[in-house]
Image 1 (cartoon, rainbow, N blue to C red):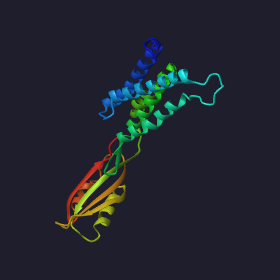
Image 2 (image 1 turned 60 degrees about the vertical axis):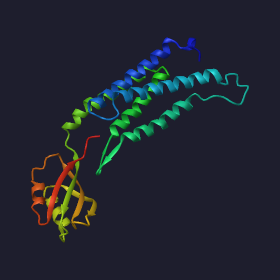
Image 3 (image 1 turned 90 degrees about the vertical axis):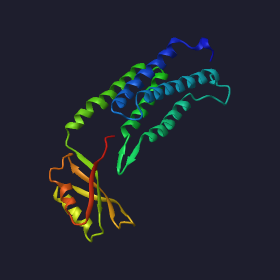
Image 4 (image 1 turned 90 degrees about the horizontal axis):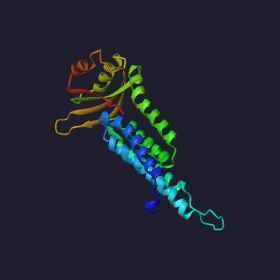
Length: 233
C-alpha cells in the first residue's frame, strides 16, 4: 500500500480504536491492574491495524473475476486476532493460593481486541456502543455488586504440631461460625515436625464476627494461624 492509499478514513479507524481501547484500559489502570491503559490501547490499535491490512490484502489479491480457483479470505487475519489475544489474556490471569486474579482484565483485553476489529472494519457506532457497555459494566455494575450479599472465599493457613484430630477441631470451629471449609493442601515440615494446613473457607460477607481466628489460635498445638481473603478479579 503506497502512502497515497492512506486516507483520513484509515486514520480515523486507528484513532477511534486507540481511544476506545484506552478508555477500557483506563478503568483497569485505576484499579492497579498490570494490563492497564497502554496495554488495552495497543491491543485495540493492533487489532484495527490487522483488519485494515487484511482488507488491503483482499483488495490487492482478491479473486473478483471468478476465473481463478484461488481467492483471498479477508476474515482470516481477523480470526487469528481472536486466537492470539487468548495468549495475552492468559498472561493476565494469576493464581495465588487458591484465589484467581485477572479474569476481568483478560476479558477486557478480549473486548478491546474486538473493538479494534470493529474499528478496523469501519463499524464506528458499533465500536463506540460496545465501549460504552464495557465501561458501564466495569464501573456501574461493580458498585451494584458491592451492595449484593454473596459468598466470599478465603485461605485459612494453620501451622500446628502433629496433634491427632487437629484438622477436625479446626473444622468444627469453622462450621460453628456458619462457614464451610475444604482442605486444599497439607505440608509437613521435617525439621520442626509441624504441619501446615491450607484450607479454603467459604463465608457470607467478609466479616469474621465469631472470633474464628482467636478460637483456632487457642487450640492445643497451634503455632500460627492466618486468613487471606481472595483478591478481586
